[in-house]
Image (tube, rainbow, N blue to C red; front, side, top):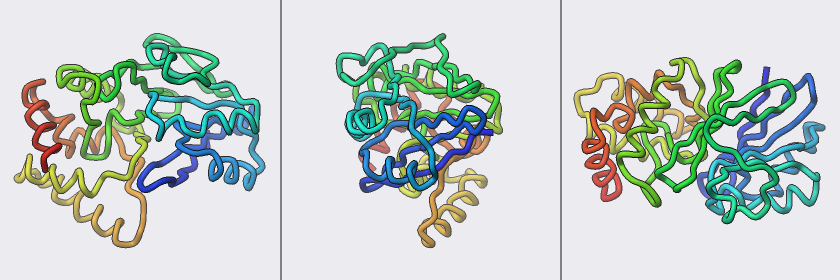
Length: 240
């Protein structure tokens, strides 16, 4: 059973520290910065052996070099973005697999937020690391791709088992939920979820990971019926 630790950094980023106890391997997903990650690993007596990057943005790769220098870890990331992540050792794409000890993750291509964005699906653990593609009640901005691509991503992710835990990289849930209520004002599940989110945030609690089932019920982007509707909703959210 993977141990997954949330490390809040910057203003609203989450870095995920992932430990596989049998092999004692430890991996970092999308380290925005190095120091808090190295400190958390040291506190737990874990040696970081790998980094997995979902995309090139600096708030996901900014800690790569320093962590690699400190630990000698191996860095894996999107083949399509290797020119923008100079610290990569291994480049992967859809159909490839990566391992943490005996735990296997399947690589999924999920372009749109960036052109080469990937996700890591650990089927045996019901876990997916999605970077900035899927958020709690939201999706990533379309910086380098299209609404059609993001719609395809939502369809692909929605096919994962409902119990799959979704580890995204930002605490955007409250703001996403405020827009979601405008997009789907009659969605009772969404109203109930927002009550829980507001209560959690008032106490300073995190709202992620989420699950595929919860997003299928309350996320207006995963629930979009077409690429055109997703595009309309994404534009509305950008201007919300």
